[in-house]
Image 1 (cartoon, protein in one colour):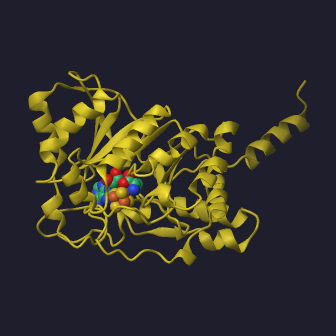
Image 2 (cartoon, rainbow, N blue to C red; image 1 turned 90 degrees about the vertical axis):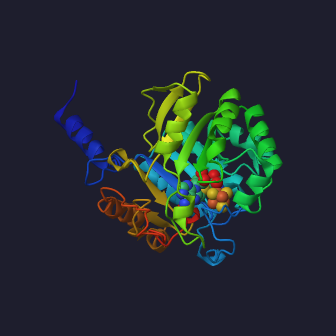
Image 3 (cartoon, protein in one colour; image 1 turned 30 degrees about the vertical axis):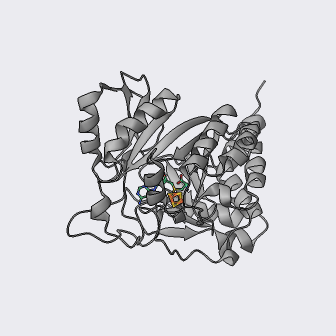
Length: 349
Ligand SMILES: C[S@@+](CC[C@H](N)C(=O)[O-])C[C@H]1O[C@@H](n2cnc3c(N)ncnc32)[C@H](O)[C@@H]1O
Ligand code: SF4
């Protein structure tokens, strides 16, 4: 029998239960992307300048602090965590963080723990990632031509990345390949990438280049609208609309001839902000509520100011109330420079 006291207790419990993160546009924030380092073993031409100034190591959150912050977000209803960077697998001790975060998978609070990687370290870490409960990962790969790969990444070795992909598949990780479409560079290779990825049971997502950070080159030269990529693929393949949604910006089709999924991320030609469910944390504890806006909240100070999580909890709530409706990237002849000063490697894409 339920008494009045029991009912009051139920109401109390409901009140103390961590509130879900809901922004001013009624979007539920359930996805946190964490850039665990801004450093990388590649220097992709669309992402970084050749000589990058990286954040001073002293400014970085420790792995323990990153764990604590991620855990606060999980307690506030985040169910999906993606580690990214820079290159997440070059951060020293990264597997300690992955392993420790995996407790939230075990508890059921987290539905997915995943990462986006350039694949260079996967031979070393694939099995360990799988053992920690990581089920699928995104691997960025823009070309299957070794010389072009070297030209795009400046420092990368295609053979090492392909070995990494082999190792990840052998370990049982599912892989989605991300390729940035670059005018005059890999635009003729998208069909080849698609055949290769689908032939190995991997989805492929093509991404439009975004104007983030000074890369020492003009964006307009790199920019390739995906409407053109799609039109060209449509001449060769039957692209069937499907209802597959990941809550992210990609719009998917099924390629009838290969049976595989193909995604398009088109921030420049199609605005995906209305369904945005994510926020981004940098390795210094700065929270960006939108990839395409400057506004940010510092979570490092409240995190360090107290051993308890009340201050950081309140700082997160306040930040979410400032999540903007969307971005306003433009690349055209009048807007040739970066729309934002920070590089993709800081917020992690
Ligand atoms: C910044 S990287 C970080 C993770 C990892 N290093 C990697 O390359 O997968 C994440 C994704 O952002 C993409 N990216 C980087 N700079 C970009 C830009 N300016 N426009 C569009 N995508 C970009 C990369 O191709 C990659 O797929
Ligand atoms: S895209 Fe990824 S791999 Fe390439 S430079 Fe940026 S962070 Fe490094």
